[in-house]
Length: 126
Length: 435
Image (tube, rainbow over all chains, first blue to last red; front, side, top):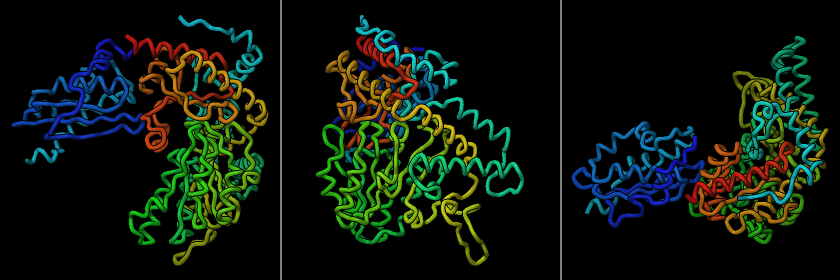
């Protein structure tokens, strides 16, 4: 099945929440060593709510589009929403079936976002 | 719409017929006639004669080697040692200089582990920027152990582990090599052929250059990417060690070769100890068997080793002259056609002249991520290519400054139709990303 559906290509060409944040309270970077995908996610968390979130990095259309879709889902939401997102939620979000190797591309942003929660930056302490 | 300038069946009929004949040796094409398999640099397809030999072992003389006194074991042992003889002849070595391992990675780790005890405190290790992780990480780790053992300042790490640059054309920079190797260089590890750039390194000349600076330098050659494509003579190369994997040369997975000059193999502390590598074991002491057995602990991949002999026969029957001519024609055609069809949109890495490289090419297409290229080629065109860093992260990130490449590698069962299929496939990839 063609995984390059309109929705994915739209997010890839016009990603939401793309870029970096000034003074994020939380930030994390991760990579996928087999394909070279890299992603960084910045967040500003106030009272357990993700008030701002942005991603940047390099990667395939799947990894970039999934990041865009995921961040739309968690922006302005409580951190518990992000914590509860599962692999199945991501595959539902994409709407196409991925092979195990391509699934890794799709899950990179979720893994990074969830890890960011436990990685406060220096500016979160001030 | 893209149209063919050339009718491959007419213009290249001889070549076309050859590949059709050769394809019959590989059962996978019966199962998957549409397949354009362009990932032989990762692992080659396996001809029937090799598969049949594996079955023969399990069905006719399935027994452990060098242990039983019964007929089955004697037969298995004889077949196993016959493979060692064939390998030695194939590489121009002596039988006792051929060690069967699980692959190139294991072979190289055995050397790095085995030579650690020979390093002096002021020693350094030299590798090149185009190494596969298998010929990079073991030496980097060796240097880190030396750093700890010699109690040197941690900032001296770069001085102990030295990486030789490559030129813009993807060759080893011999000027930099002359700077990096000195009288204290204990190890020089280099690949014969780059698995990303396809560069064929002039190993023989480089060995001479290195030994002029330091006659005692130990040279280790990673031949995983060269052994399937060209005749190797270890005496001619004059390296100390050479490693290869049988699965890249029409043989089974899980088998590798470590060649070493006899006196160098004697220096190796065995990486693995245990059964079958010992002469005498007591509560107080263990002594090892002579070469090659002291470096082959435990039960090996007997069927795989035995079947490798068939792969050698298969290659020898076709001959490296024919293999080389066929692959050179393919890579020349691929380089020309891809450049013509995609112009500035395609970047092909490594030597631009086909005769400086083996039959693989790594490329990027516009700003389309290689993973997407490989995915679309797979689903739309039944083409198998590799995407990523091909186990050469330092080369991609530190040297070329790119996150990843796509790689197409050609073998004897490929023909110009596969190149044409690749071109049509890449046009489809572009279409997906133009939407």
